[in-house]
Image 1 (cartoon, rainbow, N blue to C red):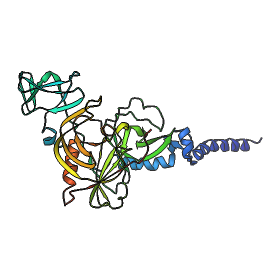
Image 2: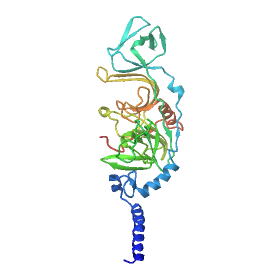
Image 3: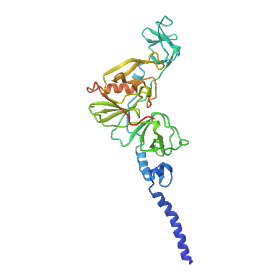
Image 4: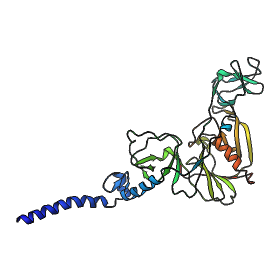
Length: 356
């Protein structure tokens, strides 16, 4: 072979070795192929490279939801000195410190508010004293919801349990990466399904499984509803407050456990109570007695929206059917719902998915 042809052949091979990988990298990959090979040819972090590059620009431009948090209501959070009754044999009530027994509170899920204390005794109601040894202090959750922008291009979500993200959907936890803390707010830039579960892209090469977040989803106004109303998504455990067709506020809630599911439907609130005790299941294992439950709106017989000081598990089902909100959120819901003449706001309970 003449030398000039030999050199030409080498040049062609060299050019091909440079061009072919480039052409391959530019070949659009399918969404399915990127799930099986998250960083394979034409893929990045489980998405087609072109789509990921477009989203990367958006993630850098909008790294977090454009919302304004409702400030924690310190006055309401500190209005009562809440304690749990912890004596598994039940708690005896006395008429004075070290005085005569006048009653008994059975063992159960029981909370009181303390107004006075004397030498190892605490007053739970006027003239009702119990041993301080039978009580444990409780600190209400300081979580609060946000005022939303209905025109935001991305769905907002809260982390409901601390989670270490994955670099691609369905992948292992990222090494040397801190957990995303509980109640952190995230934008969802993309979502895919892996093995029947949704995975959400919440940052560059940062994916979380759906079970760790609660999304704020907006819906159309139900027929017959007007003014100020509330939508409660049982699947996401999120409440959204609306002014006619416009979402105004969103927050995490806790609705009924499987044994006491919150009913779906559209309801008119029929009573509002600023502060009252609640109790139920007397004589049963799940007996509960709760003093000073604040900012209650009844809407489905004895089911209500109300403030909650006895747990900090918002975003998960937790109740006997009521819709639990934090004290800060319930105070805002109570006041906002009646401003402007909306004494009996509507409550629409729905589910964006099915629990399993």
